[in-house]
Amino acid sequence: MRTKLAAGNWKMNGTGRDLGVLTELARRHTQPGCEILICPPVSLLHRAAQTVQGTSISVGGQDCHAARSGAHTGDISAEMLADAGARSVILGHSERREDHAETNAHVRDKVRAALAAGLVSIVCVGETKDQRLANETLSVVADQLAGSIPDQVTGDTLVVAYEPIWAIGTGLVPTVEQIAEVHGFIRAQLHDRFGAQTGSQIRLLYGGSVKPDNAAAIFAVPDVDGALVGGASLSADDFSPIVSALEGSA
Ligand code: PGA
Image 1 (cartoon, rainbow, N blue to C red):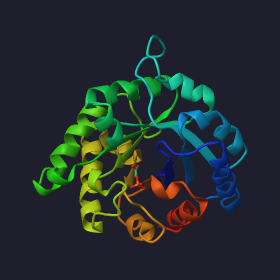
Image 2 (cartoon, rainbow, N blue to C red; image 1 turned 30 degrees about the vertical axis):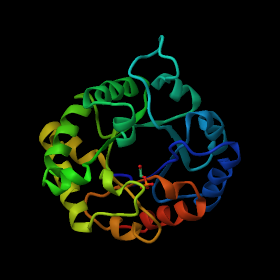
Image 3 (tube, protein in one colour; image 1 turned 90 degrees about the vertical axis):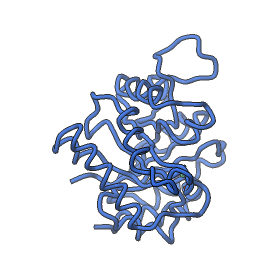
């Protein structure tokens, strides 16, 4: 049985006054039937970790450098994230791949760094609109999985998030059939590479315009073990019903 995961990605949003969202989520979900994770900007990470201490919520980072330390101005290491209270880190988000020219090889090195620091990696994959229209979705996702995930991962240290780029922040969502196809494909790829046991333990999240009104339908899709939520994770009123939908899913 895979533990379901509702993960929020605050991206470059939030200052100290937004920490109340965490308090409110913790108040509404004292004994959640799923894992709840919020990844705030790194400036808030330590305070966020303190805010959720003793609650059902954990916090994570949105990126890390592949090196443990060194002359990398403006970057943050996996060990530093862990030291600030993170349990997980999002890696290879399409905004990182695009804005910072991150390749699959970069992402793989970052996952190795996260493993060394004891962090769970949430590795993001997904196609552009053009790639979907050209029928390249599955081959793009296969390449990203093969290139971005190192051999050493396990069901406890890796989560994969399928995030079609055209669905992120746009209000567009794939059909449940499209989500089912890609999630089934990812599951099969993980089985082939890591064997049936590890392959069936790794959790698969869907991400891209998950909202309170579409969450239940998405969570009913086989092999969807939760969501990676951007915009709707910034408010407890939006994120809490998504958590509840996940708790209520079979
Ligand atoms: P969105 O972002 O929910 O705002 O579409 C999802 C993501 O980028 O993780």
